[in-house]
Amino acid sequence: MSKYVETICKKAKTSSYNSSKYDTRRKNNTLSTLIKEIRSSKLEIIKYNDKDIKLASKMGVKDSFLDRLVLNKSRIDNMIDGLDKIIQIPDITFSISKSKRQLSGIYTSQMRVPIGVIFMIYESRPNVTIDAAGLCLKSGNSVILRGGSESLNTNAILINLLENSLIKNKIDKNFIQLVKKPDRKYVSEFLRMSDYIDVIIPRGGKGLIKNIIQNSSIPIIKHLDGNCHVYIDKSANIGYAKEISINSKTQRYGVCNAMETLLIHKSFSKKHTKEIIEDFLLKGVTLKGCIQSRKLNQNIQPANDKDYFQEFLAPKLAIKIVPSLDVAISHINKYGSMHTDAIISDDDKAIDKFKLEVNSSSVMVNTSTRFADGYEYGLGAEIGISTDKIHARGPVGLEGLTNLKYIVDSKGKIKH
Image (tube, rainbow, N blue to C red):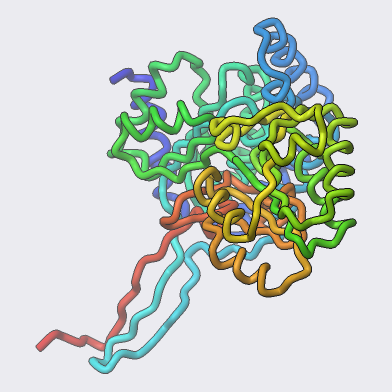
């Protein structure tokens, strides 16, 4: 085990023990200081980010990857807005709930507590550095951040701003640490540090998730791929069907909550189905579809089974005409990633069935999949979108980064 990894982990563990000493006011003041630091350093952040973009471009990365790497003024403003939202969220750490006197005379209650030490590993997306740091600070968790090698320059300036904010508010600067060495061998070492790290939160491709599952015994909050669906029911409002399906796919391509498969009931208007297909083609989206959909437009390429499992993260879309709501639900549960799936319908029974039977962390009703986001859900920022079924599910915000412990109190009660 390298001294580098061990030192980071020990510092994180030690700093996590002090989390109860940092009250809400100090944590919020630190986040306010960070907002000021970011706001006054916008041009410098963009300058460092430009270095990363140029290096990544030379490596010939995909457009979707490059898009996630970019930090412009608008995205920096979104980071600041996310921090402001975190400040406004009520601080639930160390709060007491469910107090009850038991028949034995003891009093039981539950306390909301931080998880401890979080190892956050993510690719591109330097905004995650700020989102994760802000949420971990507010939830009382010490965090070790390991961004991708492609964002080293951007993350270097962001961690400086974070450290300045911690120091100015007398919080241990080791509460938030960045792994500054890009060599992947260090990641393997972190995966074995179960004595120090309480949970791993990965945000990346299936290969990254698979590697962690196979090589670590530390609990994971998984952020898997977003193979999201929109289902247009036979009773769908025409305007909703067009606007939601187009927005879900084209508002931004390289994100996990973008639609990747469009399912359309066979009884939905053929005329309007053709119009939706044409709208996608005019926007430059490559369409891959079933036999029935290809009969509606000769520019649709044939789709195979693999296409329906695919998270394209690009201007590509799979289309399928389905005979019923049941078939649509079966398709989503088979091919989807349990991330986000939407129904467009005016039929309350169809909507209720979809909500009950689609096994995803977010189910949208007459709403774009692009709203599947912690910020949009009022969580402030998010540290990821969990497709797991245990502990945290969907966008993981403040509550998802805490756990519960029982507090038992009495006047000298003993067990007889």
